[in-house]
Image (cartoon, rainbow, N blue to C red; front, side, top):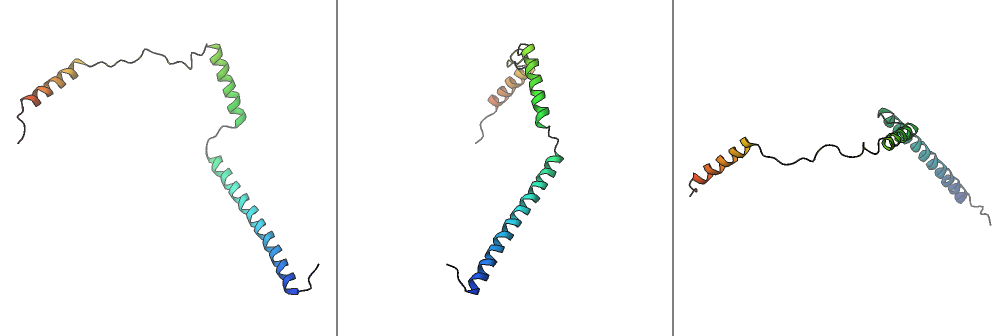
Length: 104
C-alpha cells in the first residue's frame, strides 16, 4: 500500500539521503584515519613481514647448525663475593655504632 501523503514521502526521501550521507562521511573518515596511520607507520623503521620471515629462517638455520649455542647462556654463574675493603668498612661501621651511646 502506497501513501499519497506528500509529507511522509518527503520525510522518507530526507531520511534516505541522510543515511547515504552518513555512510559517505563514515567511509571518508575511515579513509582519512587509514592514511594517517600509514603515514605514522612510514615514520617508524619497521621491517616488512617477508624480510622478517627470511631473517627468522636464517637465524633458525644458524642455531640448528651451531647446536643451539646461540640460545644458551654462556659464562660461569655469578657468585656474590665481598671485597676485603668492603668487609672492613662494614665492620668498622658496626664498631662505631656499638660504641655510640643511645640517644635519650
